[in-house]
Image 1 (spheres, rainbow, N blue to C red):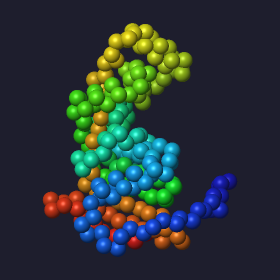
Image 2: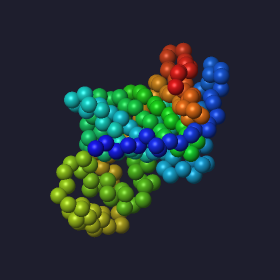
Image 3: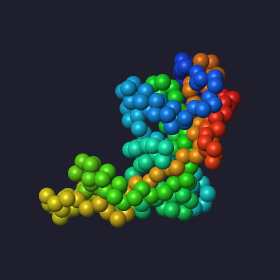
Length: 213
């Protein structure tokens, strides 16, 4: 028997995007929306769903944390040997989606992906809490694990090996940059008449288009 969810409904009361989008810098708009989400004290406002392509052509998606952004792209960090790392090695493209339930906004960003340089990855790695650094040296992300106890034993052993020394960043760990060439901004509006705008990058800059909801 199907679970009926049609009674769950929230009315959105957002402010529409400007009528004239020409000349709008999507990165500036993204920064403003991110700032608004952080100011609203939303849980994990930097969380984004990164979608990649599996070898069989099926999509794969997971939530990661955005750690830096600029017109150069969106930056996140992970294990390069993980499922998403292998998928990005085979198909270096990704889509990142943000959902902010407070202001009822969504952003989708699409682009090619490349690895962040190692020096930048190391700077971020050593800014992380020490237990997280040690965990990155142990985790064979996406591989099968016999038990939680095994993982905890490996973490304890790794901590003992390192002692008080600096934790070396693993060769298989680092950052990725999504070089955004397409943005879509979605603002929830009353009566489901939402506001949508798409920005596509070309040699001449960004082209803005308003879309039907």
